[in-house]
Length: 340
Image (cartoon, rainbow, N blue to C red; front, side, top):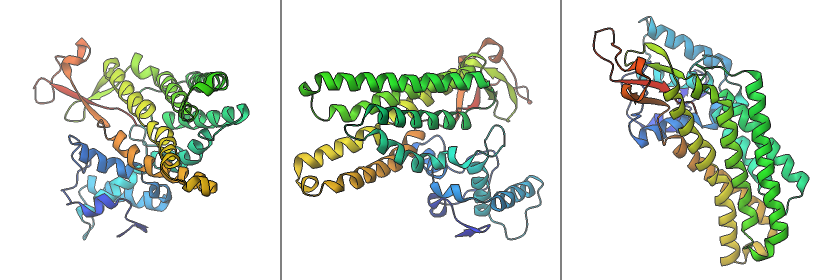
């Protein structure tokens, strides 16, 4: 389907029943995994990288008409949902600013395919290991910053510290393991050397994320009531936001591109002679498994928790536990943006 000059960006949207449009509520039910998965399929869709400035401008104008109650004749709920999808694919939810294309979540899979392939190179030299771990951590820190919860800003010093610490952790883990493989590798299965990059990536990703988003845990993230009214910053909500993101993004997700491809290649080598007879197939097979694994795993992992999290007032700081909304009713729960 054509919309504002581009092909419909979300195939799940095109085939799903169209609910009444809302600017505040998500199109898909975020209380269910399937609803969050459909949402994340859009977020990571590489086609979103081709959204032009004109398409974004048209989408924003259409949404502005909806806010003013002056939607042009012939515009459907589906059109409005697509306009909102365009906006959310390009603009940061907190700042409203354009996220550079290379660090949008839509670029995550295309960018990580060559990076993961580089880190999984067999018998890589020390310089090769250092180079690909540096590239990976440089990209991860940039993505973490671009998709952070921006209600609490980080200083340049914090960003630099996260970058240095994450890169240092990745190199320390990978190079130490490389030395251990060289010394004791003859006692271990051949696959051992291929899974080491995962542990380096997971450790470094966690360290970098904790540092670059440390302010969210100490100063808090913005919490809102059901009416959308902000009530301040909550460190308790910030800790939950960072912890859940670290588990999904830094620990669980890297399993797909870093563990699955070596396991599949090892299985192929053990069960068939295809790669022995055609060794040049090893690289394309590994790249294919990286792409497929990331394409399946990334939206599933990101859908594990809602991006707009709900938290009971009783879990927050004392000053938020007895607040009332505009109707005089005590607020039982708040929401906050977990970040991606």
